Image (cartoon, rainbow, N blue to C red):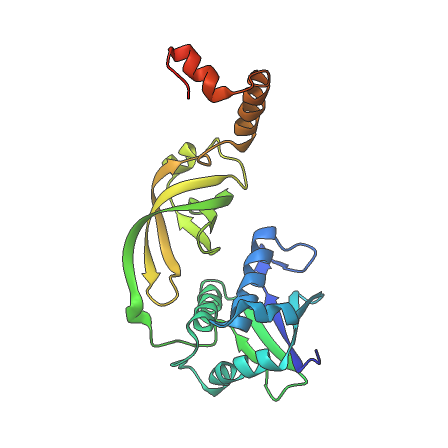
Length: 262
């Protein structure tokens, strides 16, 4: 399919004074940014459209270059033009708005964080999301406080200045940095990176996108999956060998009980 143009999504970020590049970006940041780029491209539309988009990772901070089809460009253009038009993003697709909001908030917390959108071979112009910009939507009243048990994969725990854990939610794929305490970190001391955990959170939930923000850990419900797959497989193998010489299992059970078997 003939491409209709490209957009480069460039992540500019300093961590401990060192610029993030494809060579040193953390796996968690790599996955998070790439997922956010995908969410921005598709918005609330059909994720199948991504099958016709072709990403490339380039040098220069961390750059994801996406070759767009005509259908994707047509979908993106109205919302992209809202970014060019000023601060208010009223009417923008909810998922795209959520992505812009994340990038904006990170830049406010860290002035060295910036996301550049750099179109090529399209009528669109570059957009820079940084601490100097003030993009905002009209959906702040859609955030409500919730308390919920969630399951997710643990990517990181600790924190240099504040205790926190990094989770990727099983239900939505959203990456969360969850505020916690040293006591809860001690409860998770036996959990390995990439293990599944179930925790109880208080957070704010967007009623449109179902995104969570400002999460805080209030309990650790489970530190393991609901079952150990290796242990289950061993039990199945053991049981299969034990019953190998029994022809009719139902008849054998009936005989042991002294019951008739039809």
